[in-house]
Length: 183
Image (cartoon, rainbow, N blue to C red; front, side, top):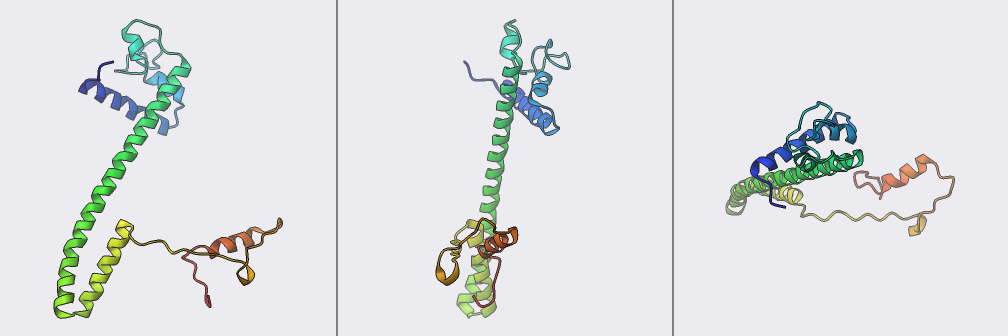
């Protein structure tokens, strides 16, 4: 099968975007399939949707796809469209991360020079803060390991009648944001 032309790829992308929008609006896959079908006989608007579902059959004069095929096609389109959106979002995040890293480089250079040259304590503090921010941005810091043990360092014992409050207290022990005095 030959590679789709630019116009065909654009029409397929439009169909996928329309499918996602209809699904987000609450339409079930079969309704979406009929709304975006190429064959006016099954299209709910009685039009030939450009490169709609079953367009290969429609252009050859064959019967329209059955309901199951429409549903599979819609689900495949929605999945591909959402994966494309996620990939695009991840690329945008990486671009922004690189931009922020470059900004931190420029600021760090100023603070570092002043810290090293003059021994300026506020500049040293600023350089350290920039380094901490970069470590968070790039995920350089290792997460703190937390080990929760029971009485005298033994295993935590749970009984079948443990209450929700007791379980929540144990979970809170593993949360690094929870700080307990004396430990």
